[in-house]
Length: 398
Image (tube, one colour):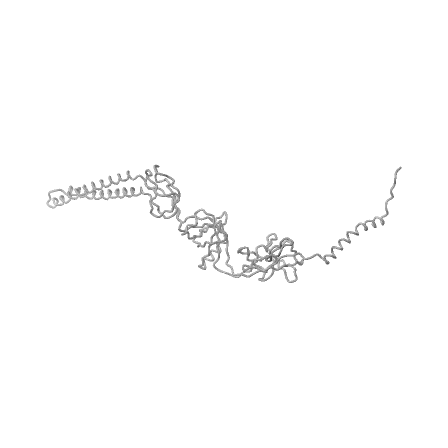
């Protein structure tokens, strides 16, 4: 037997649908009543913008290099007889580092000395013959031609003496060069060539890096160069500070002493150099360095925490919360950064409260619930400590 169902009328369907939705409407109405009307305002943390006297600064990455650096090479060829220093030792200027076998050069010096003695003897003989010839010429006992010949011989013998003396000086220099000494004071590298090896003028025996001062080379932008040019016109030098990889701040102070004569057309950067005192020997050439260059001219600036600045495509902005709790969009132009505090330019006044936490919950014109926090001496907000677990005592109480 087949059963047939009659379709329900539309009025009956509407009644059933309303009966099903009614409990949901009542539940939502109850929640709204429990919340007291419209949704609550989004909670945000705000802190006042501050006004500080600052100097413009830029930070760079650089590399340390020695002011004096020498690759030590022998000036004569020979066999290394002895090495007089320890690898990596500090050496003084003029300190003996290597000795080249001096015996061949001592023999050459003895030969040059004997050659000079022989030349002087010949010169004395030529001078005596010239004196006798002059007497004979006055008595017409010799010819003028013979007298001229003897005169020329005497002059030649004097020139031979000068040549022998020069050869003797060269021999003495070569003997001195067998003692290879440090041309500068600094830290020596290892001995590349040890005793018993043959060397010539192209051999690198070791290298010495001066340590009394060091250079820090870094690259600046075109804007940096233009600012330096303006400072140079006012006869004011920027302040340069440096920090190493294991240092948080910039504890070492130096001075800018070199700006290159052209910018790199590929990168638009220009090479700069600052020098630092290294009398304590804490800097080693080749170390990476962080550098900060400050302008000598101070000015007053409005500053906000770096975390308060938002980005809208190419624009930078902050939200200012007025007395009525409505956030206002303020476009700003960021400047220099000073330890998490950013200089800003634009329609922002000191003392106005900017959103520093909860920026993502803010919508322009929609009221928020601001919580104002105090700031430290630098203007950074001081956030309250997070609440402890339920049942624990408040911080500072036992």
